[in-house]
Image 1 (cartoon, one colour):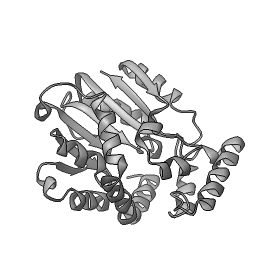
Image 2 (tube, one colour; image 1 turned 45 degrees about the vertical axis):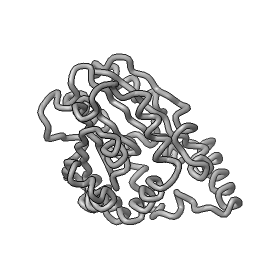
Image 3 (cartoon, one colour; image 1 turned 180 degrees about the vertical axis):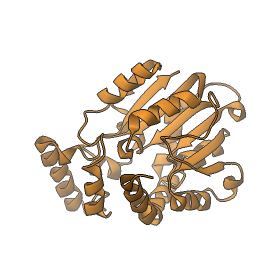
Image 4 (cartoon, one colour; image 1 turned 45 degrees about the horizontal axis):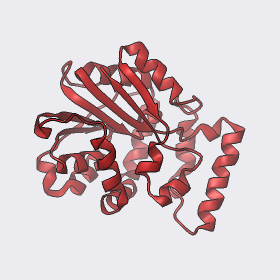
Length: 252
């Protein structure tokens, strides 16, 4: 483990209980239905139990829980033990049906062409070697398999003055609305220090992702820049107005 990876693990290990509360709220709120509707737009139309899905960077388990409830076969991995513990707790009785494993998204311990679908959310930006991660995700997908990756330019404001102004305007509007600020309620100094040293923070995405995935041999690589409007709650939309979530879809 590199020193930077150790710092990233420590940050998310410490944040696991708080991040789990966010997932619990999603499971009880409108996001659960909205995310399921989004997945139904893209997942194969066949026997769900026969579709093997790998949830990479599951965190407190939101994707794995809602997709297992929907009837799919789930394997969920995360780098931090604390996140996996929270995911198992949040899954409740469904935890018996989900294969939880501690694993590095950049170094998967699965055979080639194991999964029909790979899903991920809010992970790629936080990796030390995202190109290697994408290569691994391509490797473990079956021919014709689907990658669905949801992410955003979360910390581009650390490198771009216009994005910084937009970010500060978001913080002002959140304060005026008297709602929780999803950025500043965390250990923001530690996260910003990490974000300054990981490769994707200053990069223009999803253009970078489309180029890398195409070079890896994915077909039908596309980005949906409007997915945020379908899957986020009103509170999330206010928090992340300057950093809208995008979706990358690619087929092997």
